[in-house]
Amino acid sequence: MPTIDLNSDLGESYGAWTLGDDDAILDVVTSANVACGFHAGDPSTILTTCRSAAARTVRIGAQVGYHDLAGFGRRFIDIAPSDLTADVIYQIGALDGLAQTTGSAVAYVKPHGALYNAIVHHREQARAVVDAVRAYDETLPVLGLPGSVFLEEAERAGLRTVAEAFADRAYTPEGTLVSRREPGAVIHDPAAAAERVRRLVTDGTIEAVDGTVLRSPAESVCVHGDSPGAVAMARAVRGLLDAEGIDVTPFV
Image 1 (cartoon, rainbow, N blue to C red):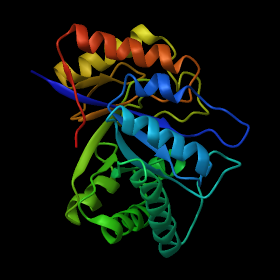
Image 2 (cartoon, rainbow, N blue to C red; image 1 turned 45 degrees about the vertical axis):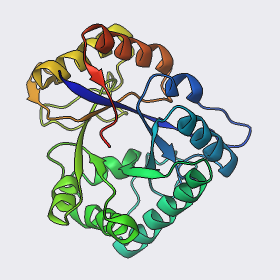
Image 3 (cartoon, rainbow, N blue to C red; image 1 turned 180 degrees about the vertical axis):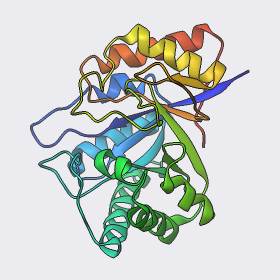
């Protein structure tokens, strides 16, 4: 029986500003990429999200990013590698402390937004993130884009790597994500997203914007929690996977 993990970016509300419906998404996914306060998430929000995830035995991952609240972590920052390593260690530690008070703990690390996309090709920053994970806990798996230098550096350093695909993001023919500045970068049709995930799990392929069929060895699929209609999309994906007899289970 094929298996897949479903993950989502959660805990991204801040103060009086609410983003997404974390509880509804947590009823569907198996892993939660929880914001660590640098791109989104205040301590109270993060703790509440950890409690909700722990109550559902959903795995908690550190969603680390650039220190960029105003830009929601979606702007590249030309940060020194040593500073980036320190920032990532800080974020993992903060989330892990909150998670442990709920009876859970950080189970993996997934970079967010511009950092995620930068370390597809930016080797110095990729190494900086790898160095941070190794320094904090070298048993933590890392999620990243297949073919990225981040996963290459992580594997070289002895970390467990988990290839990830996206239910609701468009792909270039090269296998990278289409920039959010481009039209059609985000998929909004729940049925279309669900079908592409089914195909990914059963055939190991995903279609790029120009029709190119890409091979994708994904162990985990992300459904963004901050997109309009995110709950409906997550439910559609999970519903189709369940109907097809695909085992939706955490990768760790």
